[in-house]
Image (cartoon, rainbow, N blue to C red; front, side):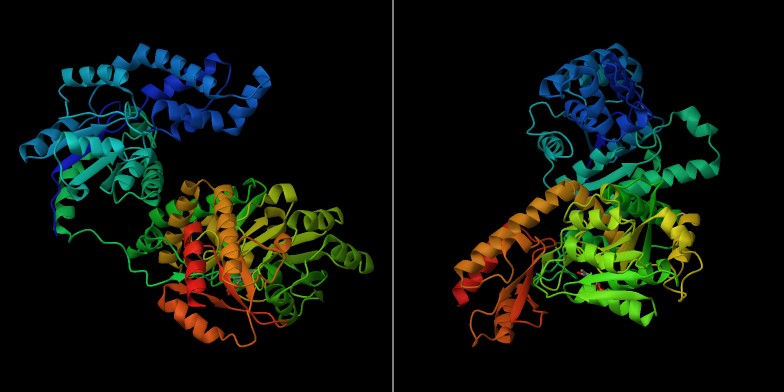
Amino acid sequence: MKTKINCVIFDWAGTTVDYGCFAPVAAFINAFNDINIKVSAKEVRKPMGMTKIDHIRELFKLDSVTNKFQELYNRSWDEQTVAELNKSFEKHLFASLDNYTSPIDGVLEIVSELRSKGFKIGSTSGYNNAMMDVVTAGAAAKGYAPDCWVTSDGMPAGRPSPYMIYQNMINLSVSSPSEVIKIGDTIADIREGVNAGVYSVGVVLGSSDLGLNQEEVRDLSELELKKLMTQVRSNMLVNGAHYVIDTMAELPSLIDEINKKSSKDSSLERPYLLLTPGPLTTSDRVKKAMLTDWCTWDAEYNLGIVQYIRKELLKLACVQEYEYTTVLLQGSGTYCVESAITCVIKPNHKLLVVANGSYGERIGQIAKYAGISHKAIILKETEQVTPNIIEEALCSDSSITHVAVVHCETTTGILNPLEALAKVVKSAGKVFIVDAMSSFGGIPINMEQLNIDILISSANKCIQGVPGFGFIIIKRSILDGAKGNSKTLSLDLYDQWEAMEKGEGKWRFTSPTHVVRAFAEAIAELNEEGGVEVRNKRYIKSQNNLVKGMLEAGYEALLPTELQSPIITSFRYPSSEFEFKSFYAKLKKQGFVLYPGKISQCDTFRIGNIGDVFPEDMVRLAKTINENS
Ligand SMILES: *Cc1c(COP(=O)(O)O)cnc(C)c1O
């Protein structure tokens, strides 16, 4: 069914009034200043658009603020502190709010044009009712008065929840989200629209994300302004905006464009859950992100998406940009491992690999093919790599310079003790290389604290993107040493990095654009889920449900709990008559795809629980298996 847009819901500050959204910024800074804590305008702007008390809580959560508060007051901040700061914020805001109610250029004209065409005009705000009494009165006196305004007062929650939009729809008798455009200037605005299921539109000039007043915009060179605007635009798109416009003047033609399009995409087909550790089940949101074709020479792609991803990856690894950098490389995960091993390890170096599965063994194979001097210690697949094994190997061969291990060995699902391994490798002064392919993003890894030199992972594992490229997070000092050491052209880690760094997000050879865009979406999704710790908890819960349910169905896990990762689990065949092929085929028809076993010592099959897969899915799966047997 095709519907037409008949309602536009505007945000207030930064969108329709208060160009650049300056009123709250000053009030937040002053309120924190009153308790002797400095917050920057940039920090203040990040959560902009949220209900103010939620916004204040986000600011307290900043490490710098949390630590400073502790240092000054000898205790941690709590809800009482947040409430008190909110009072002081309100005092500062009310003192100046009346000065920030002028409509942004062009808004009055657009609203009157929309009205003449019969559109309903709604609005939502991060301000509360008392603040809005001031703002709406000031704006009305200058000619701007939407048909209705809603704040989060009395709502279950403010942005990014959708309730204020629904209240507008009730007040204005709008019958479907597909008839609504929500337009705003912050990420909280964009998410509010996405969560409400309406068309979510961002506006760049005058936005809080741009954070510039009109004179500042005028003073920038065309190039500088374009670069900043591109960053804002891309950030909005990555956070789910359906469209982004530079100014409100583009709104009428955007509405025409939307009305011309066929009805919104429905949910995507998902014949079964892929319970394999990559490719894995991805969300609709990640899949839909691939429906646009991107050109690789545009700043929107390079600066906005590729550089965004590189920055976010460093954050996920808990490292600083001055010490570490990241290289994205086409191909599957193995290409990245091969690139790192063959570029970083030089003729006068020697690599130690301790393997307890086929991915560890593969690192040894890579070294062998490249003629790299190495020693491979092959353990049983059910035996953990221990610090002792590494310590002994290092003691018996002082020519070893680099040590490589796999964090989660996907062959069985065994987890190697990364922290303890890092300790022995680093106290021996060796370079530590970690294949964290199937753990990064799903198990917290503080690369800086563990002093890991090189970490390798790929798009289609715990960050839950689709396959097509991988990445290497590496200490800059080590990467510098890899210059000119590559034996191949396309896997040259240093050259790939140099092109990407100098070209601000350019890939040396054809970039997997759709995959990269989907990956940016997957990162945004990870951040929204609550980050790596929260995702890790979900994986643990899923894995626990799986093992418990499978045991009830008569299937025993290969590994003891203390060696088991929350990523993928191997199960023994329940009897010698068990036939995996028919078991697999039957379950596939019932909506679950499993993974064959990979180990030599006994018959197993594997079930992964990473991806857009939840603890309830594991309960359902075990129940289905139980009923089948
Ligand atoms: C997936 C994976 C790899 C890479 O395998 P590709 O098939 O090249 O993507 C490497 N190591 C581990 C531990 C893995 O799980």
